[in-house]
Each structure stands twice: as C-alpha cells, then as structure tokens.
Length: 279
Image 1 (spheres, rainbow, N blue to C red):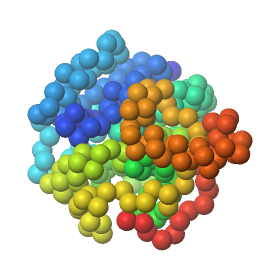
Image 2: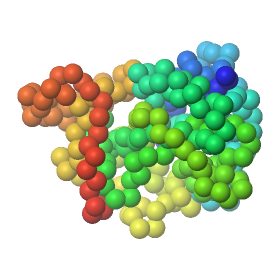
Image 3: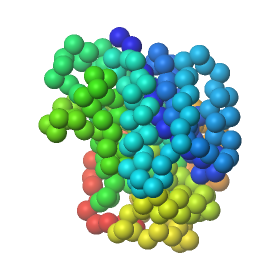
C-alpha cells in the first residue's frame, strides 16, 4: 500500500498559515507528498523547500485568480493528478492531524484497500476559533468531512475545495475513521484574519451571509465549548506562543480543575450542536 499526501499553498507566510505543521503532521505515514505552490510574494516556495525530506515533491503553478473560489479546487486537482499512491491524503494549509491518529489511519487505509466500494475516509472536525482551547459547533460549521480519497481518478475536488465528489455524479461512498482533523484557520491575530478576509473577497470566496470585516475580533470566547485535550505535537510552539490562548487556558484550568477529562487530557468534542448562527 502506498500513500500520497497532497496540498496546495500560496502566500502562506503573508496569511500566517501553519503549512509546515500541516505537512509534517502526516509526512511519517506518506510515501510521497505533493505540494502545489502557487505564485507567491512572501517566500512561500522557500518555506516549503525548507522541509528536509526526499518525500516532498513541489510543483509550481500560476493560479488563475479569475476563476474565483473554484481556483482552489482546480489547483487541488492539479496536485491530485501528480499523486501515485493507492490513497491520496489531502490537507489544506491550516489543517493538521494528531500523531496519535496516524497508526489508526494507516489501519483504516489498509483495511479498506481491497474494498472498491469505499471512495473516501471521513474525519470528525475541530474548528478552533480565537483560542486553541475553543471550538465551534454552531450552524454553518461542518463537523465531518472527507480528506483521504481512493486514488483511482474517479474522485475530484470541487467548489472551493472544501470536499470531494465522484466524477460520475454518484454519491461519494465514505467510511468514518473515528479520527479528528484539527482546523486552525481561525486562530490568529485580528490583523492576519482581516488580510484573509480581504483575500477571500478578492477571489470570490467570501460568504455573502457574513460580514467581510474582522474589525470586531472574536468577541466573547466563553460562548464556545472548551477543548480539554492535547494538540498535535507539531503545533506545540504555535500553541505556546499564542497570548490569547494562554490566558484562555488559565481560565479554563481554573474552572475545570475537577474534570477528569482535563487531567487526562482526553481528546473529545461535545455532541451538542448549537442551532442558532453565531457570527
């Protein structure tokens, strides 16, 4: 069994994406890793080249920003076409896998390898928000998504590259891995988030139902569930260096001193969905 990792990235430094942590989080179980690096203005190509691994293969491309948000799927599929593995493991540049799940994921890929009625493997998601110790479960934030696909040229990325579909139009046949994907795209400074909002609006990726300004910041984080578990080891420095998260964790620790889940640092998320939208 051969596993290909793949991702796309552009201006990762400018927009503060943890792309190195993302790639390194699954590199140990990948036989190769394809990185589609778009034309950047901030040293992103040099950043990717700094990963000292023979598994990394970089393809450079000129992204057609006139395609709007669909450029993300187009470039994702460009990287996917370069994958040689039985399975293709996709991560966006702000998505990270916990090292505790790597062996489980290899098990599931091996288990389903000969079962051709399985197209993709699905993850539970943590959408961290404002703090590394808060996550969102409210309306508009999907809680499951596919990130490992069978590399048989019958599955493609679509839309704004948030997920995959079969090219014949039939429903994607998925199996749940019971593993978590850690999404860190919403843990950053207000300034960095505003840059991302502006970039999203420029390529037509912005949500018309939400404000395209981040001047108001994250608001009261206490309205979101607390995360009591551990983060992937590749994120250790980033988590430790985030001032707002340190303050938030101190408050959570004072409140949760009695909670066994906190002391055992168990990784779990609430099953309760908040129905009203929180902007």
